[in-house]
Length: 254
Image (cartoon, rainbow, N blue to C red; front, side, top):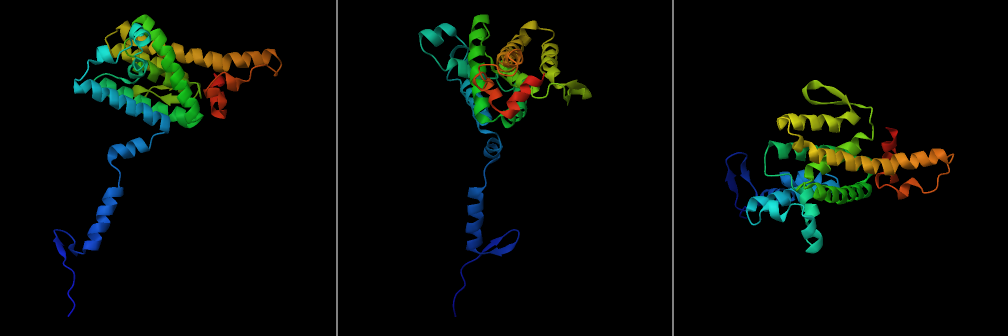
């Protein structure tokens, strides 16, 4: 009489064949972890930015280096000693794990996803690179060691220009126009820091750098177009990463 293959008894479900066991193992191998699933759901450029935030935080927590000396902006060392990673690490590091850094990461994911989805990955990547360079220059001149929050503010400001007069829910059930959002977050940051003006300097930098881009990418080409009766030289696509797309041209609506 042929023998049946051995079976295992499980606490729930009774006897199971080894074939079922193998199928379950295959399913477990194919099922991504929670972190991988979260990262996989993000647009490519934003995903790289979030990985950079996680990497710089891990380096700071490891104790291998002091983030205030190894990761911060330092223009003489960046140029003189070719420590070219400093603008990138300064733009990615949001501080040690805390409610403040968690809130900043949430804002980055929320509005970074919205902006990259609206304008596309390549224009969004160019925008981030441009903002990182500008913030490194101005932040280094003003002695701001980390510009991660300034970059997030720049993303929020650019996102607000997509539909500046749309309504958005703010804290405590307050409804604001979209263009007011960066300034509302700036006011909340000042209140949380007990009225410290120094706490909002990075946010002011972010707004100024993003508005500099918005003016020369969208507003100025539109003025030139109107002055030349619709035949302005210098197409807008050469002026702005975000203005290369149809969604990016909406930045000029406000």
